Amino acid sequence: MFWLQEAAEKGAEHAAPAAEAAEHHAEHSPIIVQWVNHMFGHWAYDFEMKYTHPIWTRFFALFKTTPEAVFGAYTPENAIPWYTVMFFIACILSVLIILLFRRKLSTENPSYGQQTLEVGVLAIRGMLEDIVGSHGLQYFPVVMTFAILILVSNLMGLFPLFMSPTSATSVTFALGLSSFLYYNSIGIKENGFFGHLKHFAGPIWYISWLIFPIELISNFIRPFSLGVRLFGNMFADEKVMETVSHMVPGVTNWIVPVFLMPLSLFVAFIQTFVFVLLSQLYLSEVSHPPHDSHAEHGHAEDESEEFMVPILT
Image (cartoon, rainbow, N blue to C red):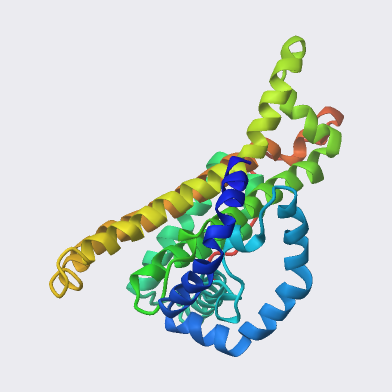
C-alpha cells in the first residue's frame, strides 16, 4: 500500500493538474471514444458520482488520499474509459466475424480463408484434446471464444481509429479472472468443493500440509500472471510502435510502422496462443474423464469415446 501513501502525499499538489491531464487525455483519445463519451459520458459520470465515487472516497480516506489523486479527475469526458469502449467493440467484432465466416462456409468448395481458419480451429481443438483429454472437448466453445476475443483485441491496435484493449490492465486482469473463475468452477462442479480443495494438497499425505498453502497461493496468483503477461507484451508492443513512429516526424510516422507490423502480428498471435495454452493446462488439472468414477463398478466406457464438437458449423 506504499503507492497509496505516496498518493496521499502528492494528492494536494496534483489536485489542480489532474483536471488538465484528464482534459488532455480526452482530447487525444480515439475519435470513437470521444463520441461515446459525448453521447453517454454524462450518464456514466452521474452514475459514478452517485454510486462508485462515494465508495472509493471512503476506502481511500483510510489512506488519507482521494479517488482523484489515484485515478485522476472525474469528468464526463473520461467517464467511459477508452479500454471499455475498445473491448466492447472487440466483442461486437468477434461476433460479427464468427457470423460472417459461418455464412460463407462450404464443404464442397472451401475458400482459402476457410481452410486457413479451419487450421487454426483444429489446432486449438487438437491442443485441448491432447492436454485435457477427449472429454475436454466439451470446453472447446469457451476456449475458442477466449482465443477469438483476445486475438481480435490484440489486432485492433494495427488499424486506424482503434487501440488494443489488451494493452490496458483492466481488460487483461478481467480476462485472467474470467479464466480463473471458469476452470475453478469446472473443478468444483466435477469434484465437489472439498474435492477441488483436496487436489491442492497433492497425492503424498505427509507433506500435504506444506504443499496445500503453496498450491493455493499459486492458484490465486494465476489470474494476475495471465493479466500481467498479456498486458506487458501488448503494452510494450504499442509503446515500441509509438516511440519509433515519432523518432523523425513526417518520415517515420508511416513508413517504419509498416515494417514493424509483422512483429506486431507475431506478438498478437503468440500472446493469444500463450493465454489459451495456459487456460487449457489449468483445465487439465481440475477436469478428469467422467468414466473414471464408474470403472470400479464395471461400467467403464470405451476410452476412445469422444465428445463431438461442431467445427465451423
